[in-house]
Image (cartoon, rainbow, N blue to C red; front, side):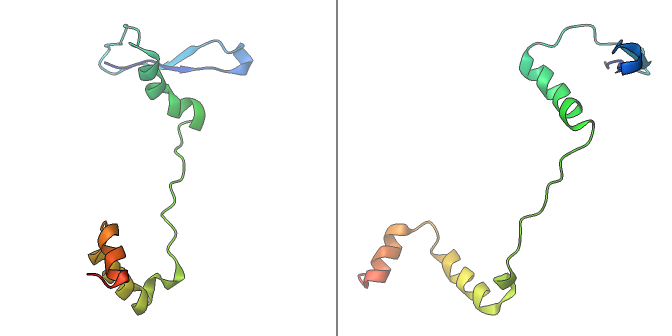
Amino acid sequence: MGYHVVEFRKERDNLPVVVASPTSGVVREAELKDEEEDLEVEFDRLYFGGRCELQRPPKKWFYSKFKSYKKKKAEMHAVRNQPDAQILRRAGLW
């Protein structure tokens, strides 16, 4: 099931004109169930004009390639999620 592609133009006072129809000929006649479903279908087309927002990769710091940084990360990885044990180690009780 598909939808008709409709075009709105200012020259025609925003009158909807069907530009394309589904190739199978079956058109979805039922209304959308709720507003959330309608937003999921229409949000990208309404607010981005069919384009998608640029997702930039996370910034890599200049020191992330240093050998000393990698060594420290490896040491921290071994004791991650152990805040109580870290406190005891620093205090010299472990």
